[in-house]
Image (cartoon, rainbow, N blue to C red):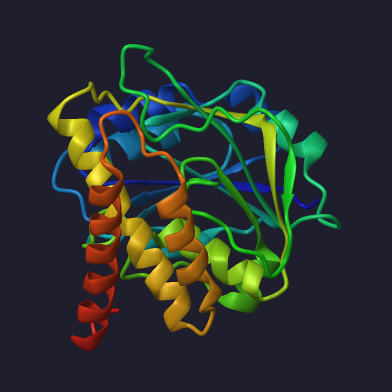
Length: 287
């Protein structure tokens, strides 16, 4: 392995970004010569200053970039272009890498078996709602050509070998937080699988998610957004010729028990809304 690039994108969440950067395991970054790429996603707050301050306070390599418009897919692509290492590690500005994350990744990543992976996403604050997390604690492979359900691996804890980018391209720049549809992370992994790459889930890779949402309106809105993104993802994959994604996605929606407080039919309706939005945006040449 020829090194790691950690890519973090942020838009108008300067205080959260500051906490994220303060909790980076600096000793591991220095020991393993990790490269940090920070992308300012067209912020209008103090994000640029927070990033610049971090550069002067650490000894490992840091690059700061600015995207011309919002959208995490676009921002992550900028980060990829600037990165110089083989393994690309993605996390979010409201997340904290575990202190042993870099060591565990170096120990366990096996390019011959899989070319992308994710891991556990745990609550940092246990009073936050149990949303946008993944507590699964067993290793599994995701075979090339197989279906990957939304949420199996999340962009807050995702590792991609550069070979994938070289073959299938980067993230869809018109998807992701900051755009109308959020499914940029899982859509890239779906394309990778359909192009012969294999994935894995490594529970040793732990990221803590400090999303700060409590049960109530905020969580209801987040779940609705996730439903819409899931439907858009299945539609997008089917539109690329991988029609099994629509079948498998809808089957999963009809047979999986929804989360606390969710209605199964409302989840399905939200997913269909997401699929409709995808095709409408495509017709308007916005995808």
